[in-house]
Length: 211
Image (cartoon, rainbow, N blue to C red; front, side, top):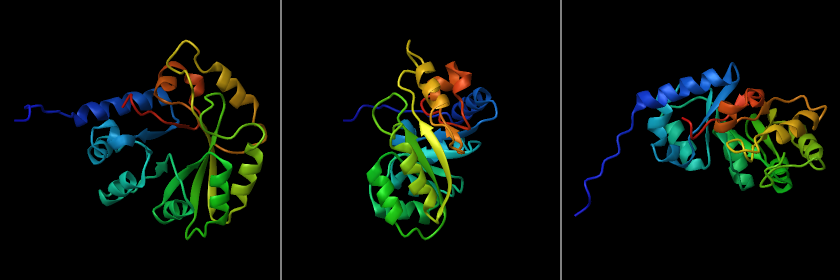
């Protein structure tokens, strides 16, 4: 016999958390990160509770499709894409893909996108997991910029120790001083950086677990 365990999700609490995040964002636009089925809270339920966000960020196309079926029309940031087919799907479903390596740039270059879409380029400013570095960001940016169906490009990074003693200053200094000459919005702060480091907001913030 299964244990009588019940999880009670408060939509009001989620909405409250979003308002706190927006206060920290201080005017920056906000992606509500609801990957992994909204950290187990239910992606549709979370999207309804977080409807005041400027957009939603997810990891897989199944979650994006569930949001669209549920009536979500706001922008959706696809944190991972793995094929030319998925790149085209982003264009069809009005999703914004995050591109973080040369193979993905080539997939995008060759993709016959049926509609315009925005693109995020992930910069490795110190986490050393994914992203372009000082040597290969400019070629990637130029290639993506040349695609006739790419509308806007945003530069994105992820802080390695925003909730620890190391903080974000080293990565923020790198991202502030280099790359220079890129006329592109920046998406910087995750939950911990949003709370602890006002200087790390950028144009778009990406709170997830704090929501």
